[in-house]
Structure formats: C-alpha cells, structure tokens
Image 1 (cartoon, rainbow, N blue to C red):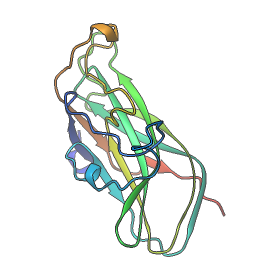
Image 2 (image 1 turned 135 degrees about the horizontal axis):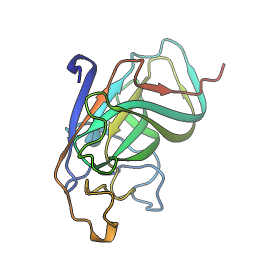
Image 3 (image 1 turned 135 degrees about the vertical axis):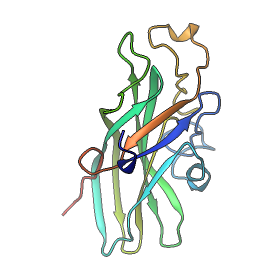
Image 4 (image 1 turned 60 degrees about the horizontal axis):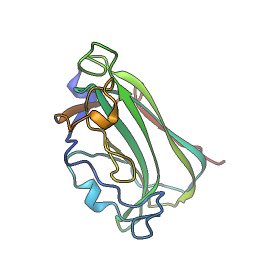
Length: 186
C-alpha cells in the first residue's frame, strides 16, 4: 500500500459511527443535521473542497467510486455528501452504503492493491453557492440507520455472529482510484 496516496481509519464494531440525520422515520434524527460531532470522530475521513467561486448546481444521483482495503472479512463503506455553509456549518445532503465481503478463505478485503467500490449515495438537488464548500465523509457505519457491520465471518448467519475485532480500513485518495461523481446541471 502506497501510504502517500492512502488514508486509513479504524472501525470498531462495538462503537460504530452513529447516524446523525438522513433518511429516517425517527422525527428526532431525520433530515439535514449539523455534522460537527460526526466529523470529529477518528473513524471518519473528511474531504472538503475549496470554497466555490460561483454557484454549482447539482441535481440527480450522486455516486462515490473508491478503491479500498480492510483488515476484516466483512466491512461496510459509507459515503455522505455534505454542504458546508460560508460560516463553516456542515449539513448532510445524501448518503449511501455498500457491504464488502472477503472471498471464502481470505482473511481480509483488498490486500495491498485494494478493491474498486461503487457507492450509490442517492439523489440530491442543491445549489452550492459561491463561498460554500462540498464535503465528503467516508466511514463504515451510520448506526442505527443501518445495522452495524460486526466484522465477522460472512459465511456465518447473522443471528449467530458475534462482535468481531476492530478493523483498519484504507482508502486510496488519488483521483484515478477514488472519485466523488456529482450530477452537475449546466
């Protein structure tokens, strides 16, 4: 793994990254919410653009292409698109998740080269006005919105799994391997 082109975090199944807003039937934890408490966590990678020079209109399905590896037999990868206001307040817009599983007989996902992952993050319609920023979170949970991944053996039925060990997750950060794809409106 080329450390100059990667970032890593450790996902702990017994203390998963919480959900803060998003699509939910819970009226106290749904919709757009400030993300500052999530962004301070060590198990969340945060990528922020420079301030927009002019308004950028985005409407449609958002996708995240990642190259990633994990020291676990099973791991979730979650991408969350946020808008950062001129005052620095980050609010969630959409998110998506994919579950990766090691091939039978393998103890980890991706090895030294990683695997390509496509995360469908849902649809959005938003104007990133001049002075605002685009922010992306990459993590491995949004609990309890989605059930936490126990990092166990994917061959064992869920009812029989126990909480596994913490897992190091590595994400490639160069543009040829990982990209946030926004449906820009002209």
